[in-house]
Amino acid sequence: MSASDADLFDTALTGDRMASETAASGPGQQERPPAIQCRDLVRIYTAEGIEVQALQGVDLLVNPGELVAVIGVSGSGKSTLLTILSGLDRATAGTAVVGGHDLLRMDRAERVRYQRDVVGFVWQQASRNLLPYLTAAENVAMVLSLSGGSRGGGRGRRSRISSLLDLLGVAYCADRRPPEMSGGEQQRVAIAVALANSPDLLLADEPTGELDETSTAQVLEAIRRANEELGVTTLIVTHDPSVAAHVRRTIHIRDGRIATETMRRTEIDEQGREQRVAEEFAVVDRLGRMQIPQDSAMRLNLVDRVRLAEEPGQLAIRPQGAGWEESS
Ligand code: ADP
Ligand code: MG
Image 1 (cartoon, rainbow, N blue to C red):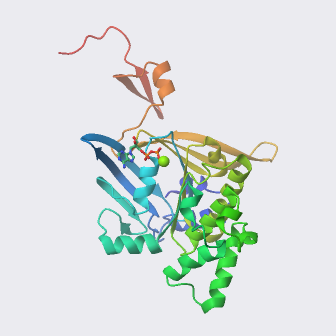
Image 2 (image 1 turned 90 degrees about the vertical axis):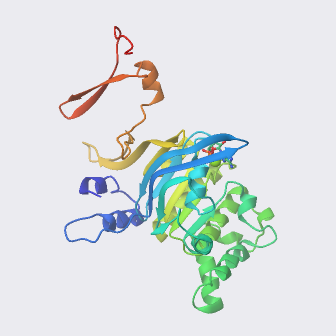
Image 3 (image 1 turned 30 degrees about the vertical axis):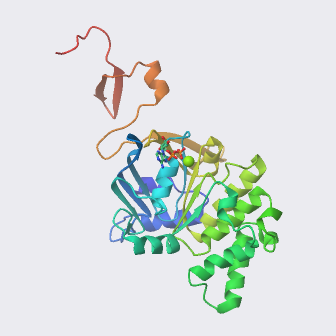
């Protein structure tokens, strides 16, 4: 990552900042491997003889400690991407490497270890994340015992459970069972459960999809705090564009491809005030392909054939214009 890239990450979240600094490749510096690296990731589903290309060549690089939102309309491939990264599904082609684990090459035993030790997952349906007959603390404890528990015996384990619940702002729910909690509280406990095994990667698929506005804000804030304090790389999927306001990097997925990315940073304006600035970038893949935004394509008639003209410092894309015969 270049110094100017690192500048894009220079705001409040220390976890992110540390990660991007460590990942920076200055002279004599050891480059830290990316947390997630996907190349040309393809997932084709075949159902009753019909093929659906859910992912059509996703290129994605996420640095350790980053917090990234993945946004796209329903059916754009968000869950497919997350399920592959979680190790629950396997891509049809391409590469996906998470923290050095090659997800397309893992055997069954490695896959189980990967799911147990490397990733934490939060589903949209709160009921899918927690066991209804266990309290919040017991739900977290269960993961700790599966993953070999925490060091320091029973006391170490109890203090780990309460610090996790505390970090997510649900310490007061420790002795409640899911039916005694609101949807938002359940999701924050679910995040604690997902973090219990100290994963390198936290994946959340529409964790706020069933919540009201207030609970949504609390859950997003909890995720942000976990990312910041634990430094866990986090990918949160949503179809809610307002989530983008909570994170520094948003990936927009369209028809199984990453179309654009929105980056945010803090700038100081002329009056010396801090200002959050967001800019949307088109994503160019390794083969030089990019998607023209649908609105612009329609408005400027950028379809079928376009003219590319290099101008100083930029490349212009113009409609073909009239008067050209079809070549035969
Ligand atoms: P999103 O999460 O963005 O709504 P998905 O990743 O769930 O999108 O789905 C992407 C595309 O893949 C959709 O067209 C969906 O119908 C299709 N798809 C998802 N899962 C399956 C499956 N198990 N079998 C067949 N098609 C699927
Ligand atoms: Mg989905």
